[in-house]
Length: 121
Image 1 (cartoon, rainbow, N blue to C red):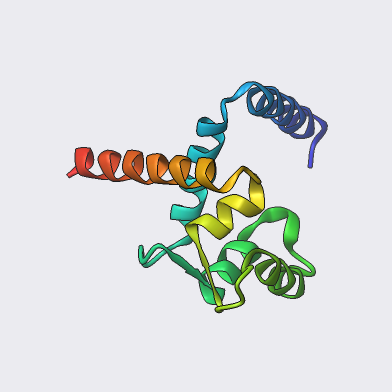
Image 2: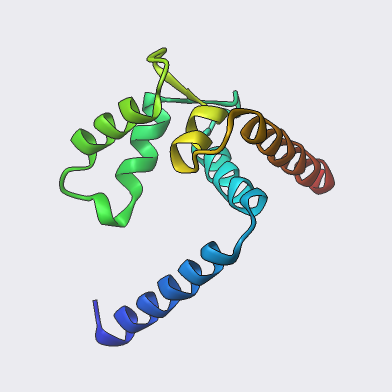
């Protein structure tokens, strides 16, 4: 990576970090839900181990040990051990909130995403 590319990536990372620190809990849940929806390729509101493996392996920072680390990460997120990651498990893992508050924020993020999809049709 060239110094210019590295400096640009560092600046973008710092800017993102500042945004994240100032963002509301709902904005953070919305962003995490968007990532969830991206990983969930078949749109069944569940992330299978296959979908997660594909996502994890595609991350540029996870080249060498992607498969092994991905499996361990999947198990951490899949709290109930049913072999899939649901929306709440994913968001709770990334952003622990009180249960009722989390459910409301996930529902709002889901509704926002559905509205965006409908507007595109």
